Image (cartoon, rainbow, N blue to C red):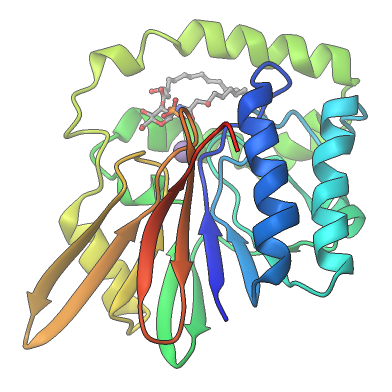
Length: 242
Ligand code: LP5
Ligand code: MN
């Protein structure tokens, strides 16, 4: 049996190929798994749990069908879907995780997270994150009508769209010392995260212990899945045209 991890699908109504690949993955693959972990950025942007669009309804329906079939499903917010909340969880049966969660993977402890908080050199982003994570601000935002929230999000996105171009790839990658700190804090030798869109397996040694960091891939041109079972793991791709 296997546990599956995905992140950075960036699903939206404007990218139907990605959505089809995701739906196929949910119906044909996730349904046979021990558990599914979604480590953030499932959506291109999630404006709020009050989104009643056909697109939002169709994605919720996939999660509901999966959890109804008995597969536990866990969700960590990413920088694009930090407004996924309790209502989404209730409607879908998905369990919301905190920013960093230690899980037991067939006897191995692992810390799972989106990965944005590991990028400590991206100070401007972390300041922005701190602002939009303020509970009072989210409380207010969640009470604004959907059509106004959509306008606010578009305006902020267009205002900051050029900001990313000014940052180096190094700034937008994880900081190794932060990776080590998080693993040490949780006393684990395995970390799984997404966000950087640089799928890979990194190993390093510290005081005679070997540490592994698995980075999930995005779903821009194909599906990307970490398949984890008792004896091994594999970062795999799924073609869009199935
Ligand atoms: O996902 P990716 O890789 O493209 O970029 C991320 C970081 N960008 C973001 C931005 C969000 O996707 C866009 C969010 C729109 C939010 C609308 C808010 C509505 C209010 C909600 C209130 C509860 O996450 C990018 C990182 C990159 O990852 C690293 O890979 O660098 O970060 C940025 O580009 C952010 C800028 O550097 C920050 C610019 C400061 C802007 C200040 C505006 C303050 C707005 C406050 C809103 C109330
Ligand atoms: Mn991200």
